[in-house]
Length: 234
Ligand code: SF4
Image 1 (cartoon, rainbow, N blue to C red):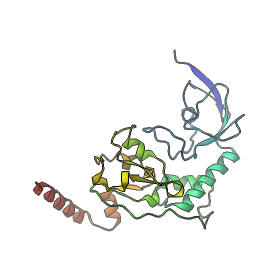
Image 2: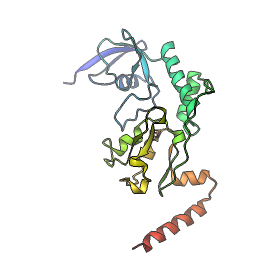
Image 3: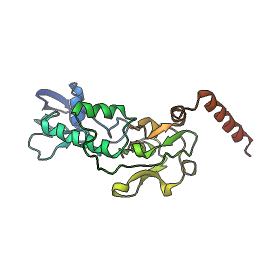
Image 4: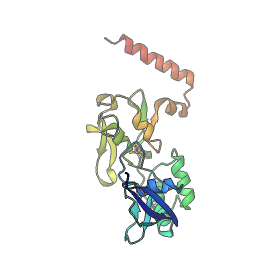
C-alpha cells in the first residue's frame, strides 16, 4: 500500500503520497506556485528559487520543487515574505537579461507587482546571437541559466552531452565544450533543448528568420539550396 502524508497548504488539508514534493501537493489542490527552472521532463534543481514557500518552523524559505511534503507541515505559498522574495528575483532577472521572449515570466512580474526597472544600474548580460547550425539560434542575452537545456541534452533525455556551463560567477553562460560551434559538437539537432527553453534564448531558426523579416519564400529557397549542396557533397 502506498504510504500517504497529510499536510496543510494555504489553510487547505492535502493528502498525498509520501515522497511527493510541495509543488506536487499544491498542484493537487489547485494551488499554482510559479516555476521557471522546473520542468516535468527534467530533474528539479531548485536553481531559480521562484517557487519558494514558507514552511512553519523553517527559518529559510523552501523551494517547493524539491522539498518533500511531510506529515503535519504547515505551508504558505502566498505570504508577504514569499511574494517579496519572488518579486526581488523577478526584478533582478528583468534588470540583467532580456525577457522580451518570455511571456510567462513577464506575467509573473505583473502578478507579483514587480518593478522591471528597480535596478537601473545593474549590469546586463549581453551576448551576440549565435547562428551556426541549420536548426536553431542561441541568444544568451535571453538566458537565465535555468539549466533545462543542459539537462535534456544529457541524462534527462538525449544523452548527447553537447552543451554545458562555461565561465564562473557573472560570466557563467551556457556553452558548448571548448566553445565549439554546434556542428563541431556531438549535437544531433534533436531540438529538445529548444523545446524546454523558457525564455526564447534557444529558438527555431525558421522562427528567428521570420522575426528578422525574411519571407517564408526566401527561407524555402535558402533551405532548398542547402539541401542541394548537401546532396552534392561527396
Ligand atoms: S538557454 Fe534556455 S533552457 Fe538553456 S539555460 Fe538558458 S534559459 Fe534555460
